[in-house]
Amino acid sequence: MLDPYLLRTELVHVQQQLSRRGYVLDVDTYTALETQRKAIQVKTQELQNERNSGSKLIGQAKARGEDIQPLLDEVQHLGDLLKDAEAELADVQSKMADLVEGIPNILDDSVPNGKSDADNLEISRWGEPRQFTFTPKDHVDLGEGLKQMDFELGVKIASARFVVLKGQLARLQRAIIQLMLDTHTEEHGYDETYVPFLANADSLRGTGQLPKFEADLFKANENPALYLIPTAEVPVTNIVRDVIVDAKHLPLKYVCHSPCFRSEAGAYGRDVRGMIRQHQFEKVELVQIVRPEDSQQAHEELTAHAEVILKKLNLPYRKVLLCAGDTGFSSSKTYDLEVWLPGQGGYREISSCSNFRDFQARRLQARWRNPETGKPELVHTLNGSGLAAGRTLIAVMENYQDESGAIHIPEALLPYMGGITVIG
RNA sequence: GGAGAGGUGGCUGAGCGGUCGAAAGCGGCGGUCUUGAAAACCGUUGAAGGUUUAUCCCUUCCCAGGGUUCGAAUCCCUGCCUCUCCGCCA
Image (cartoon, rainbow, N blue to C red; front, side):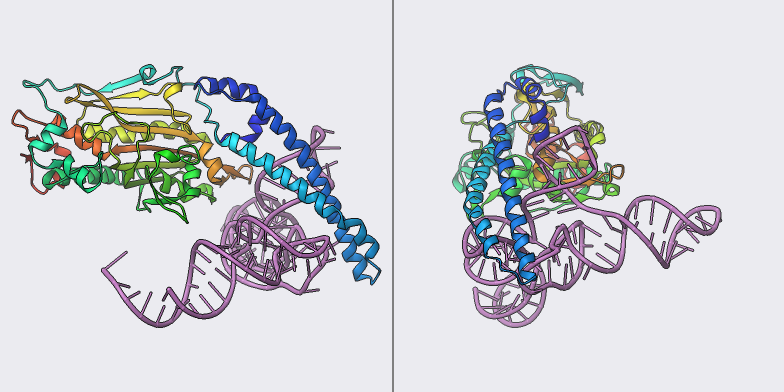
């Protein structure tokens, strides 16, 4: 959510900024609602004031034992007027809230213009894609060849976009998760967390999935409404919802492994082959809660923390700065890490690291007490995948395959594989 | 699942339907004392919003949502949550 004060005072500027995303802010509607709101609010408050002071007089008169009937006659009729005014105000305010909740975050100045992922800006590349002496297979052929990856079983048990992993391949994914958690806790100073995998509507609203993106979620329960989490970002960031964090505890750095559930409602026909785009996948998520002045640097650091995993696994990747049109609704700036997949002959997203600045914090009412002002102020929130474990499994399989279709275990994963060095 | 108790400011915790935004304590901040710190003492300290050049002033907020009333933290209803006991269970 954007700062209402900013909307009121710099509406045209905000509109210009948002046009970079291709988002059209309806200035006329906003201004009309705002004008209405102001008038109705003032009127309501005047009526309330009248009633309050009248009631106070009644109390005082009663205490003195005087006749209160004349005063009662004066105040009684205010009730209906007030009720109408309050209803009108609530109506305008909810209309404004709907409008404001649908407005995306303002982009950082460094975000390049552009419409789609084709316009994203490559920042750097790391590692050399391996030269194969044979035609590399993709993870589907490799996994099915090993009889340890079964998509038909996924369909039988659930539906399309689910998979069953078995044996050493299942263990390999677990090893990958272990490496990530150990690295981030032991080397990067994150606190490991275990959280609910269902989240309520308040939590999803806090991080911005609701109300706009309900279609992307799996709803698991009505009354209370509970949704399967699309990312650990939701439960973990909501740790600080409605909290005023002590300044000395900042930054908060959390790492969390969780399954993620996405309906992929808008992705029919995309990535239907293999494990790239599943309804359920494992991810290790990094979340930071920081002082506003630290968020830019924290964003660089968090992204670097995710990169460390790729480096440890010796997986070639590139770092991309998302353009205006490709940057997510709540984010002010996002880096994607894209890993080299020989089976696809291209780079694919394996991590997305975003700085939300105060956009989520405002919805969450996640604050800290600034020692300089003594006042509660909004924190900045950031998160990034460190990394998507399912896609990391794919990357390891495809990059470490040999001609026979066997997978050689990367050195960094050996401690987690119980003596296994090759699968197949 | 059954029975009972309760949800109040950053925290703990009082609060007859009428100057209650709310006692007290803790914590925080400022000061006195001290070489410095601690202790002690004094003072101060909720949030959101409206209006204003601004001190002022006004409104809202005592879990949430309804209701009664001129007036609700206080009374009534519904929901959510927490605690205690019993049952069941990994």
